[in-house]
Length: 391
Image 1 (cartoon, rainbow, N blue to C red):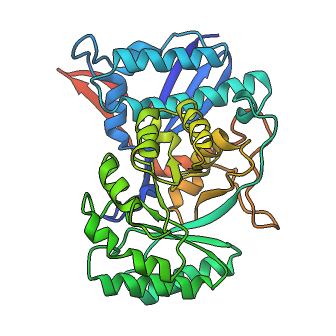
Image 2 (spheres, rainbow, N blue to C red; image 1 turned 135 degrees about the vertical axis):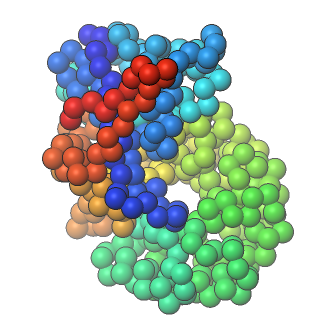
C-alpha cells in the first residue's frame, strides 16, 4: 500500500493563555493508506508545522515534507525507517521538519499496527507491555497555598506521584521556591513521589539551580527536571556533580536521538524524558529508550496533552519492566480530552495499562474535534497551497 493522503487538523481552545500548558491547542495528523487510517499528534506550533509540510522548496536540502512522503510505499516498519532517513536528508535545513514528521510517523505506526493486527509495542519488538505508574503532571500554583491544594487534589484522586512545574518556580526568591516545595510535599503526603520541573528557568546558571538543591533534598524530590536549556549539556553536568543526591531529568527538548544521547552521556541525567511528538516519532524514541536502558538511565515519557499522545509516548518503553514511571496529563484543557473517545485512566492499582489492541488503541472523536477546529488556509502568490481538509 502507498501513502494516499496526509491530513492536518489544527485544534485550539477559544482562548490560549500565556501559561506553560501545551494542551491548549493541538495538531492532529491523519494518514490514509490501503483503506486504513492512522492517527498521530505533533507536539509543536500547529500553523508552523503545517507550513513545513507544504512550504515551497527553498533548496535541495530544504524541501517540504509533502514532497518527500506523499505517495511513498508503506508496507512495514522498514518503510518508516526509510522515510525518516529521507526526511532527515531532504529536509535537513527545515528546522520544523522533526516536529511535523513526528505526528506523521506516529500515525504510520498506528496504521501499520492496524494492518498487521498488532499493538505498536509488538511492532517495536516487545512481547508484552508492563503497567506504568502515572504521575499527575500539573503546574505550580501562583501561591504555595494553591500548590498545596493542587497536590492534595491529585492525591485524593488516587495518584501516588505528582509533578509540579513551571509557574513561579525559579522566578522569585529561593525562599519562595522553598515554600512551594514544602507546600507540594504537604499536599501530596510523606509517602508520595514528588517530582519538580523547573521549565528551563535557570537557562545555564548552575549557581542559581544549585541554590535550590538543599530544599529539593528537604522534601525528598525524586528529580529536578529541565533546570537548563535543552542543549546546555555542560550546565547539566555541572549541576549533576553537585546535586547532593537529587537526580536530574530532562530530554523533552530533544528533537532527534542524538540530542537525547548527549544529554545522557554528557549531561549526566538519570532520567531521560522523551516526547514522541518532538523527537521524530516513535522510532527514535524507542532508540533512546534502548540506549538509556543500556546506560542505566531510566526512560520516561513526556506527555502533557492528549491521550492519543499518551498512548504513542508509552509504546517505546512498554516492554521495559523496570522503567515504571510515566507522565500523565492530569488537568489538560478540554480540547485534549474531547479529541478522543479513548482515555487511558489509572486502574484500581493506580497504574496505566497500555492498550492491547491494534495500532495505538485510541479511537478518535471526530464530533468532539469539530468545535475546536481552526479553519486554516495558506497561500503563496495567490495560489492556495493548504486548506483545512474535511474531517
